[in-house]
Image (cartoon, rainbow, N blue to C red; front, side):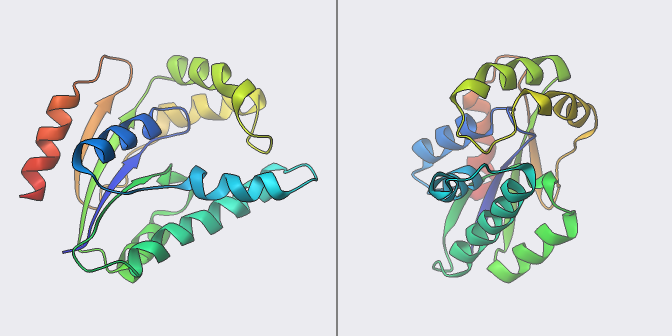
Length: 177
C-alpha cells in the first residue's frame, strides 16, 4: 500500500524539521517542495518575483506527486509542503493520480506571533526569490485561519509548545501497522 505522510503547515511552522526527524527515524525518503524548487531558483539570473516563485512551487508540487506515482506500490514518503497554498481539490487529484492509498497528516499549528518571529529570523538566510519580510502580515493572517487538509488521520503539533517527538513517532507507528 502506497502511503504519504504529509507534513503540513504554513511557511516557518517547523515542517522541514519535523519531516527530517520522521525520515531519520523511519528511514523514509522526504519529498520537499523547497528542495525541489530551490535548485531551479538558483539558475535564474533575473529577480524571482512572487508570481514566478509560485509557478516554481506548482511545478515542484507536481514533481513530488510524479515521483510518488512512479514509485513501487509499497512505498512510504514523507512530504514537506504548505499544502494549503493550492486548492484542496488539487491535492485530492494529485493523491488519486499518484496511486496513494493512505494519507497521514502531521499538522504544524503555530501562533501568529511565533511564525512572524521565525520567518523574520530566517529571511536573511533564504535563497533570493522567496518572499521577504513583506510576507509577514500574510503569514500572520494564515496562522489565524489555516487548517489541515484532513484527507486521512491528522496529528497536530503545537509549535508554540515543546514538541514530544516520541508521541508523534508512536502515533505514526500505530497507523502504519
